[in-house]
Image 1 (tube, rainbow, N blue to C red):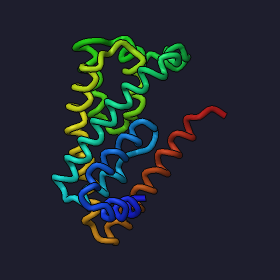
Image 2 (image 1 turned 30 degrees about the vertical axis):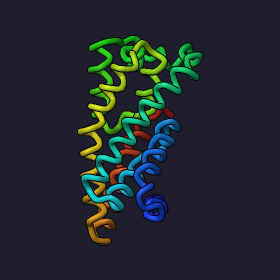
Image 3 (image 1 turned 180 degrees about the horizontal axis):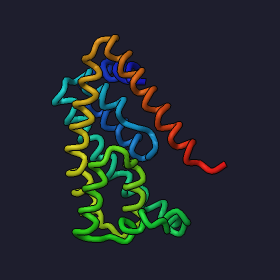
Image 4 (image 1 turned 90 degrees about the vertical axis):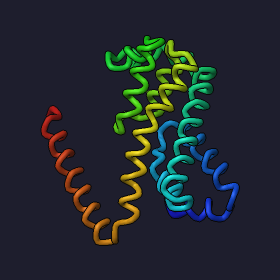
Length: 185
């Protein structure tokens, strides 16, 4: 996927910046597609810092657009049962400084899906300015870590990538076995 995105962006020259932003907005609105492949493409096509800033602008813009769309179209989902989960309630009912702190902190955590944070904030009490500021500021360090990691993987030789793949597979199997042992029956 990353290679196709690189080819796509390279084919459009100066318009590639705007196309990357549009792709990031689409990824954010979908809410379930990881954006790491687009970050990798941006770093490859534009270089590290320009690619980082294009990715940041796209993710920040995508989160804001998603927030507005979710708020307008998905408010009726606010009555679903998973929103009564104890871990969701704090963000759903937060406003002001509390909402800012929660959104900022959740943006820093790479394992918390961005789309879920945006969705819950949008149907909750969080105001648009608080969401936009907290989300964007929280994405800065998180995206820098992602961009740095992606840049290092891009630079590594095929042997390094093979080692990384084997280690990732071993870690996945280890975690999967632990989870299976804890499952009943």
